[in-house]
Every structure is written in structure tokens, then in C-alpha cells.
Length: 68
Image (tube, rainbow, N blue to C red; front, side, top):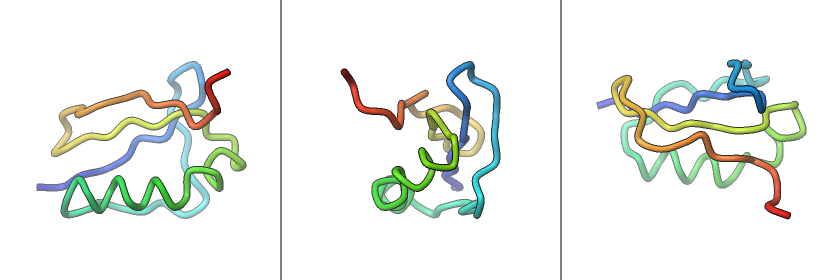
């Protein structure tokens, strides 16, 4: 199984991060990684992310901006 993030602008268009992380072997690894780098991604102009497992969306899009 491969877990991966899709990086998007607010309109849903895909954008590449400065350093693509590649695939993760577990959902926990993917979520830990996003928890560590989300602010850097937001600073790169990425507005939201979507998590997929083997091409199937698990959840998202999830905003990288504060609610409010």
C-alpha cells in the first residue's frame, strides 16, 4: 500500500511542493510528515492537501490555513 499527499491551490489545481515527499508506507507516517511540514508547505503557496491510499482519496481537501 502507498499513501501519498496531493498538494493543491485553493481552487483545487495541483501544485508541486519544493521537495516532494514521495509515497509513505503507512497512513500514520503520512500524517506525521504533514504535521511537521504543513507551515512550510503553506509558505510555498500550497493551500490544501488531500491524502490518498493507492489512488483512492481517504480524506481532503484539508486546508493548511487557520480557520477563522
